Amino acid sequence: MKEIILIKNGEIALKGLNRSTFEDTMIRNIKRRIAHIGKIEVRKSQSTITVTPKDEFFDMDAAVDIIKKVFGIKALCRACEIEKDIEVIKKTCKSYLENDLLNAKTFKVIAKRSDKKFPLNSPQICREIGGYLLSKFRNLSVDVINPEVTVVIEIRDQFAYIHSSQLEGAGGMPTGTGGRAMLLISGGIDSPVAGYMLAKRGVELSAVHFASPPYTSDRALEKVKDLLRQMTLYTGRIKLYTVSFTEIQEKIRDQIPEEYSTLVMRRFMMRIASEIAKKDEAKALITGESLGQVASQTLDAICCTDAVSKMPVFRPLIGMDKEEIIEISRKIETFEVSVQPFEDCCTVFTPKHPKTKPEMDKLVAVEDVLNVDALVENAVNNTETEFIWFK
Ligand code: ATP
Ligand code: MG
Image (tube, rainbow, N blue to C red; front, top):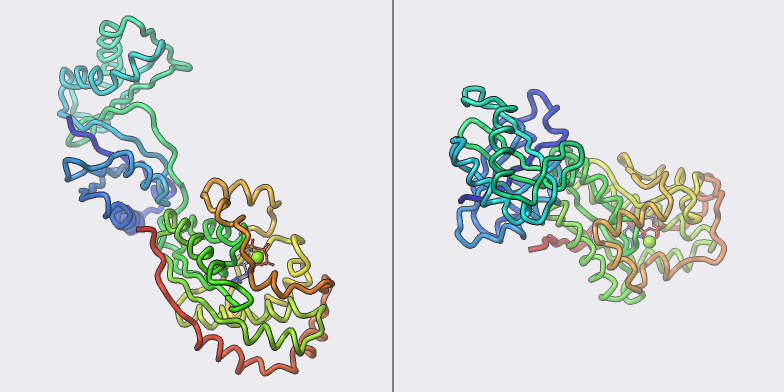
């Protein structure tokens, strides 16, 4: 009996002439993520992709767990691939789904016949298989409305497939089909969620983190890497740029009035991130800002920071409440890492009374005491890079 994984495309199916490119990217992503488990063969047919293990000891559970997190997939299931012969199909339904069927009281059969040359039509297949299973499992009766087990039989070009429960996929678009963007990642709850949301729409992520040693510790930087590592389960490999931010933060602390310090700092982040993004061929920045969450995220404050970015800034959390953000961060399992108590460069230098309604002219005048261009250039040149990858 040969077990495979059946994958149903999501939105990709609507992509007309580009569909094949989207599918190929998704298949490449699946292969990369699965590589450490074993060799697979991937085939496309209609709106379905089949993943067939080539190794005898291939870990199907682990593979399903990984594929569940690959964007572009609507649903997936383990299925049995067999010859298109009704007698073989009957016997395989009984043996392959025996555990499910023995433990249920009700079931129904759904047949999908895309090979119209198959001698039985879908209602006939349902009747044959349903009758056979009723005769073999005395515990079962048919319930077409709300069955405990749904036996699905798909008759396709080459083979027939049998499966029962279907798992929900990660949805979205395959990572890499939407270009690249640069995520500003802190160690907090919000920024990993923001990155996840753009990656879900097909965007490949790079990331930039501002560290201020010795005010921020090595452990705080490790936490950021742990967050990214967790995100790579969804996003694939991420290139991390770590900017040494200490010099700029000390200059701000010493030369900028305290109430403006956070905004000046955030404008530096935007400028530096834009420069690094340009070098990285990323076309947009992503932040975890949410309107009104803190002083630097009021509409006036966001206008001040947005003004210095050289590219679009995506803020996918802008209209979300903290609870909604936390719900996603729990789902993608970054929450547990985010709440570890390590200081961030923002928290170390937080002023007591930050401006919530800054005026741009005043801010620009205040900032003028610093040699902005030179500081930005220096920070960009003092950036370390490394790839973060789960496996
Ligand atoms: P988060 O939970 O993501 O830390 P936050 O609510 O703490 O967000 P801020 O500290 O004001 O908000 O930061 C807003 C956004 O700025 C973050 O979501 C992130 O995108 C970016 N950011 C903040 N600190 C850093 C940092 N040290 N390095 C890179 N980006 C940062
Ligand atoms: Mg933060």
